[in-house]
Image (cartoon, rainbow, N blue to C red; front, side, top):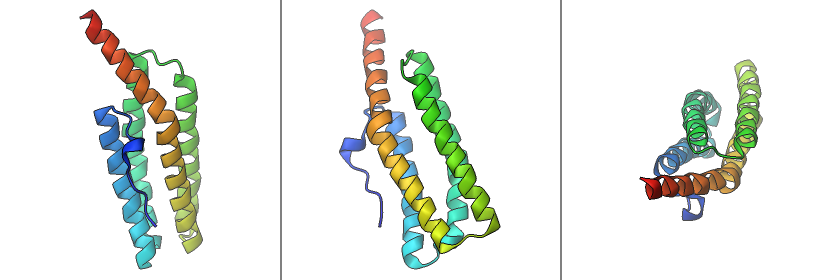
Length: 140
């Protein structure tokens, strides 16, 4: 089982798409590990990566929202906060005992949330950023 990057997930914002593809790569590494039977060790590595990378990614999106006065900033940031809270819960569970069920649960949470977040929320943000960039270029 793996997540596949498809063109319909592209937001059209180069830096955002590049970061999303990197996240897909890391999640797919976890899925490969699960298929190979070594996913229990890999879940900690994935959580470490996600802790660091999602902070960078979410901060970049927040800066972009602020720069273009994105009207749905609060809802978007709430989605990020909810994901971070879920990851904290998963990390706490993993610190106690990394079971196969936890590995699968982590994979499902991350994959489902991430694909749905990109397809719905980030695509709207990307469209808004691109329109804001066109407006700025039109003025200058």
